[in-house]
Image 1 (spheres, rainbow, N blue to C red):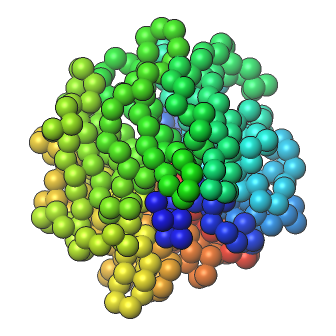
Image 2 (cartoon, helix red, strand yellow; image 1 turned 90 degrees about the vertical axis):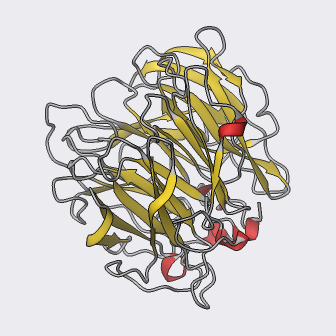
Length: 463
């Protein structure tokens, strides 16, 4: 991985000078009252999925680079500037105090850890000694929290009992040529609001001792009811790698297994609608993504894996290494046909003379897997997309696919974390039966939600 051209959230503490980014102060927010149904990714229980945005360069409590998270609540009309919550270590009820360079919000995960039917948000940071924070979901939105001994986390049902568990990665991000190394533990759910798990399990695999875990994704590739785990790790000298683990039925939690390799984004989904989770792995250094389909015996053989790029038939753009196609990926059913689709960020995309302007491509799932047929491409020059192409905006530096208005079609969120020289911004584009459309596009940054900012890298992480 070329650190100087890496646009993923985990690169913030590695790039020299990024910690000097400014930020946006905390502001209050609330959400609607609870509805009876339970929806995944729903922090306030109103039946609509919500979007969490990391701004790890934000100033909080007067501390530069302390970091914060902005949560935008979904609703029948999608995201609006008035329904949000801003969370930092300066927020009442959030443990710890702001510290310069903490990068609170550099990594996010979510799951209903306490089993109350509302999704909780787990906010990671960069320090090797500071803790991540679980922020609890509730009828008025996210509030209150408890520290957990980790820098990076990921939630999932790793033991198949129907309750959300939490993997804790303690190690942080070295910010130097050599990683700190990571220790991993699994907390079995439910997890109480005092931060006590029902039990703990050993992680199992021992190959993280020389890595810094940067991000994670979970999904069930073999249909056994237990979520499997994929990681993106920093391994030193500016390089990143990927790791994949199958969840065990008993004993230690995970066993290392073979999966597509890459240094970019990773996500799980059911792209061919066969009931098994598939893995999508980005390789930003090669500007490709690779898809491995799941089966009853796990991921299908490597000979069946398929690699896609902007040279794949139907995919907008042209393959260039500097595009970093695959730096970010997200999976969801955009057109409601039952097949999960894939959004791919190419934040280094050069448009005209604008290096690093950025682009997002959308590829669609089918019975035979992912296809370039009908693929779409979006930039800030696309009709209906607000803004204008500029050098180093890095549009597509983070992507998300969530049905935020509850109509059955996943909506695209795409971030340009360096928009306006580091302020950052996020675009929300609607999903429809025809694919992603721009007729109801909404773009927002710190100022949009009433928080004047000074280069917080808003949108560096989306969850």
